[in-house]
Image 1 (cartoon, helix red, strand yellow):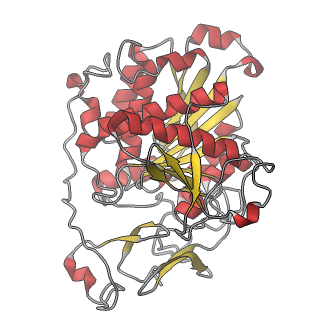
Image 2 (cartoon, helix red, strand yellow):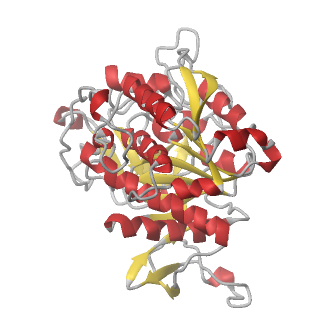
Amino acid sequence: MMHSSSNLDVWQVSPSHVDVHLHSIDDLAGSLLDDPSLKYTDIQIPYAEIPDPVHAGSWNLSSLSNTTFHEAYHNIEDIGIFVKQLLDLYPENVELVPLGHSAEHREMFALEIFKEKSIRKENSAAKRKNGFLITEWAASANLQQWIATSTAMFVAHALLADTSESYSLSPLLNNYDFYIILLPNPDGYVYTWETDRLWYKNRQIVGFNEKCVGIDLNRNWGHKWKPTAKFPTVSQTDVHVNATAVPGTDPCTHWYPGHRPFEAPEVNNLANYVTTLPNLRAYLDLRSYGQMISTPFSYSCKKTPKDAENQVEAALGAARAIKVAHGVSYMVGTLCHQLYKAPGNVVDYMYAKAGIKFSYAVHLRDTGTYGFLLPPEWIRPVGEETANMIKSIVTFISNGKFLLTLSCVPHHLGVAVYRFGTQAQAPAWSSWSRWVFVEESTFSSIYI
């Protein structure tokens, strides 16, 4: 069992492996991995020092392609300057909306990006364009994931870039308004820059005389919330993703869900904001890492959304669009199957409670070589891949389809996967629980 008293920092759990981070080789002694019968592979990750802030004068945000902004990670002061420069450069297309305050009283805001402010104000909420909401909720809640925050800023910039520039998303503003939450957890983000690069939660005091602080913001949402966190179990031969609940979850754990749903002010602020947004059609929660596009649900591996077919089909097109950018492959499947069961998840809430049909968690690069410590030179390629993905999802929602030929062959990988078709084509659905899709001789598993 991996639990809070262990000196292991669990980075990722999947049906095939568990990624564990050790701060030093000394942490190996006495840990779960200090077992000669347990097989594992060790990788030494070059630990990047917290970079010095880049001088704002060198950014030149008037050009997406030529700016140096997307070549480095940025602290909270840089992000504030970035937002101000966008407001100055594009006053008719950008608005800053306050959401409330964090646990440590920092201001939270949304960046709203649209075609023209004057026309937008004349329209009532009912006549507003379709809405597309983007957060790095799990990433900003679990602050190890700087790449997601940087990617959200790239997307915001791409939405305002001239159409002549590569990866410009500005044509999408003809039919969509975009709502981007750059810092859902400002307290934790500051803490990663000033104290602990791999901090995981918010910075909320959770009880009188509690020795630890913080709630896992990605387990504090009000759909299927539970007061206990589940931890993965590992045997000598296998990873068991159907984890065992720990009664009375310790507030010192990474995955502490809080005493009640919406206990964290950051969660409550965003939930309130979402209720004010009309016509939301899509939601993306940018995360790292794993190269996966994940559909609901997270709380259960047995429940399937009624919109699963459309969700998966749109995600397949998005994965194809990502690959076009730089040849990087993304897997598609439910959040529970690709990782593990986790109640109180933001993606489940956005789909089931906020009613956003196309709700996804997107785990960006890589697949574990660098994990949460992705080098800054990957920021722009990941941003470009994400721009392609967003364009593909909008196209699918508008047209109801994408151009992709699929065929199916049975496999024996031991993982349940989704199978396209109608009941008339396959009357005996229960006998076809394991399939893999073949596209141009490239295999891609679709877990459901």
